[in-house]
Length: 168
Image (cartoon, rainbow, N blue to C red; front, side, top):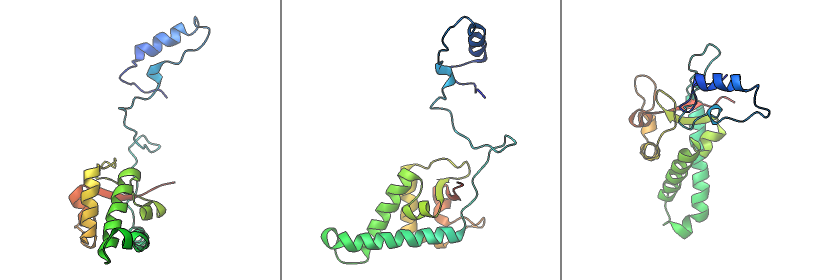
């Protein structure tokens, strides 16, 4: 199924079909390539937008435990050389790990292992690096323990983000 794009119109396609008998070799037209500006939307079989389901609290807690354990191990290995001796070094490593991986991969290591992604709310697109940094800072301040009326964590509410379950 071909989609109208900024470089290709219906008349371009009709001309290509009419002239295809005259052309010996088929030529790849740039209008058939998807534009970088086109937004990829997941659609269900009825043609309606298909949004990913919300991640459960259990998946999110397990992901947090995995991330904290990884950060603790990394801080214990490199902590004596880079940081002063305290539990604060674990928090610094946790912040850096979660911020970097969520910006690049839409989820921290624990979230990716548990099949959880961080997307914008409600349209489920990629969130900016600034939103990720603020979201992670709020997580470090233990704001995930506070939930809003609709069941979203407060750090997600402030950064206009949500955690969804990845469908494989």
